[in-house]
Length: 348
Image 1 (tube, helix red, strand yellow):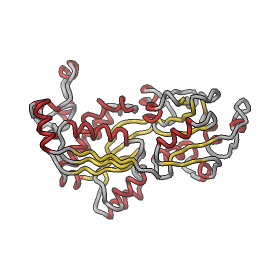
Image 2 (cartoon, rainbow, N blue to C red):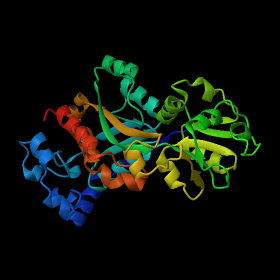
Image 3 (cartoon, rainbow, N blue to C red):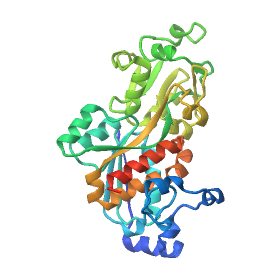
Image 4 (cartoon, one colour):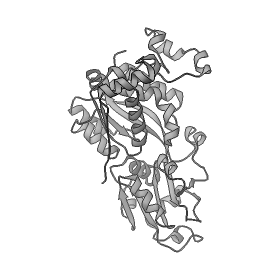
């Protein structure tokens, strides 16, 4: 397992000078600019959910404004390789807008992230591409932690092949089950496909992507996919990309962002005739659409203002960054529910 690790650190004096030069040190100036439509539309959600907050304290929804320049300390997170690119962008923006502390993000898979959050208590935030399991909630309870779920977006799990592959453009869930289990050659699945060995590149078993694929394609039974020949597993999606691009007979799957980042080298297959798009993902008609989460705990958020502020910042600005990363925004009702969960965690 290869670990991608981001350690982003800025010194107070450097940040202060940059902040003063760029925006005069004003907390108001760090809020994302509103469009004319946003200014004109009444913030009914804010009025209903946070009636005591003044107009100056509210921004981009129902959460109180975050001033990154007023914060320091560490934010430690780990988990999903799928969520990693989004978390990386949000952490960089948090630092760029003046946070003087350190944000650490380890890409170790959803299961590995929950282990650090619920079993060893090493992290403040757990990134996940699947919901937390009951057993993981119990482990958290033993540490005195109660996981709080914050939905930050939606991913379309991408089934991909090399650009050199000229025969696979659409695949059914039934064909996927054969491709990633008992079939030895492509022609075993479809007689019109080449009589060449199937080379499989898949996420490791600690990955939420692996769990999700197994749940959707194999009804939660890991045995078929783990017993397939010519299968390489890795927690590092870049390793999977390299393997898939190495042969026209290779296939794999991972989060949509990694396909988008490598679209010039990869082809994505439609599933049951449905292509991944903002419309099909939001409507849940694309068969392999899935939510993306971050988790934390109320006591952590209340004891560490920088952690609460980081989560607030993510929930406030995520929709400004997520499409560029390669994922799809959560619909407004889902994001508002996450923001409400933040308010409740903070006793507001």
